[in-house]
Image (cartoon, rainbow over all chains, first blue to last red; front, side, top):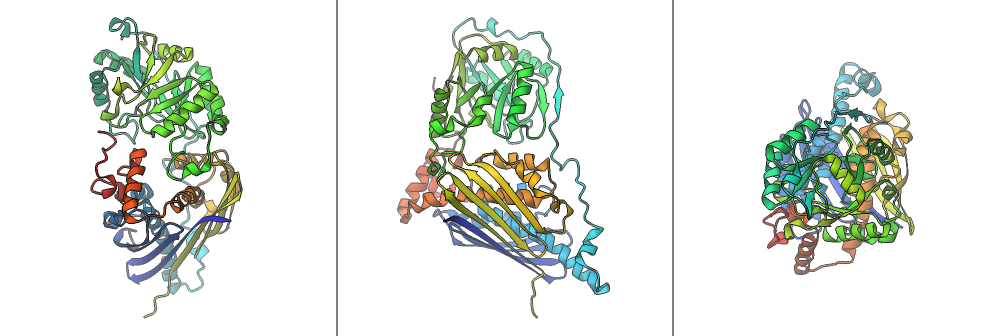
Length: 382
Length: 167
């Protein structure tokens, strides 16, 4: 039986010399929306836009219409889709964003048709394929193309200048193992200095920088430790086919999406450690709880065969998702950690990991992680 | 003056539950220049893509006239959920330059999520006042939704009295 269907219908007509008029309809089991967009033919710029709701969900959905105006002036070019999702999707409504993208990419195709029609006025026998033949360049700009996995080794210095044990001799040692800095992680708005100051202020013993597929130079991190007289460690959050993975003790740059099994091999070669962060982010969300996921079935996921620990306190997910991760980790007998996943300064230290030994550098961290002798904590509540 | 269309597109995405553990999501595209379909098979409860196939019957783009299935096979094993788009783009992008093919996979995945959203909404047919409480409670339980769209942005009655996530 059909569970859901969505139909989108786009109609485009050239009404003015340099403008296409696009009418788009999105109709699915939940939403009914329409938009009218006019787009320049020569520059593919959005000239005007109007929207209309036919059916919606929340009482406040109609507010989204107003934000459509922010797309006026956008050009259908590289980065257009991301821009529409960020501005129209986030400020307005993602379903309007989806329909707008559909309308604008249809308009881009329609421009080819319109130009071909114009060309046939001089050459009536010109076929569309002949017209397009000379223009269609399938070679991609290198920057646009997804880069295959590249692995680059970076040098690691052995010398230890920052000594945490000079500050703390024993007891509990709290490190926020998961955070993102700007601009190393484009999704973060937290400058490194701000994160460090905040971490010191709230009393953390250390932080670990885990920017997405970004390797902090060991020398730079060492300098940061000295300059701030504070434990700053470098890790990495790597995107794999099985989702994000926190990696410690591997100073390799990985571009593109790597298979988790392949990452496991690389991490093993470096003597490193893998933690799966937020393993159930969004999975227990609105509606998706209907999938009937249980800790038993979730623990069968193949990804858990390739990780050393599970992040069960993550600052960006719901309590229910963290609790679920905790149950799965317990079922698997895997060690558990906590980290804020901070993308803004104020978020640092929401959660952390409590170690029983002093940590001075990345090597100490990996050694400590491998003992399994640590626990996740709600640091800001301590 | 008549206004004959210069371009027309119809895209349809349908999600079907074929048995207790399997859903199939199909995206069909038919427009002036292109005709194609993509089908993904999804295993429950993990929402893991177990199979993907598709075909471009018509396309003026050379990159979309190559064997689609090699690129589609790359998404096997990916789970539908947050973060899936960057994984799908990254994995398929290694094998194809056909952006439409990747978009059709994304549409299939969104369809699966919306099928569950519909199921959940079906259970809550609400009067306006109940709806406000229902959505307010939803944001409280999942603070990531705060400011994710106009309905949950500051100023909306649905987030009145809710502390923004970073405060």
